[in-house]
Image (cartoon, rainbow, N blue to C red; front, side, top):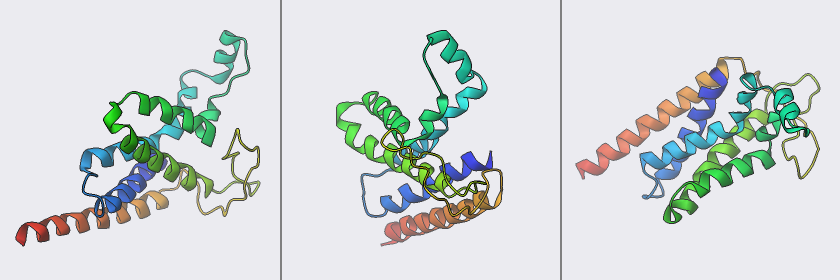
Length: 167
């Protein structure tokens, strides 16, 4: 669970900092970026519906892990973008993409015994890029760092709003 919360906090921090520059980026749009950070973890559906069961039912090779790669995330993003009004698609696409990219990049830094990450760019490439191995997804420390950064960003945002109202 610390992993999922850390992804949400990273997306919150990035989108909120961008909102300092772009007035259209309201708190509801920040939430869209946070939702984008959850897209790669749609693979967790395999805990309820195993890939083998889906493959047997469909009679084709199948693996939920594809959703945790660039290709699978882009397909998920496209579905999310189609579900919103035409006037909102560009903004939603950018913010869902921001959240998804932050998730994939954070996961690319995970400690892996092989020293290489998962095939991040699949289906464009089967390359397993090297990883610096900074942390495990089960460690609380990355979540605490993300929470601290999010707290600083939140406090800074509140201060900026207070200062604008005071002027």
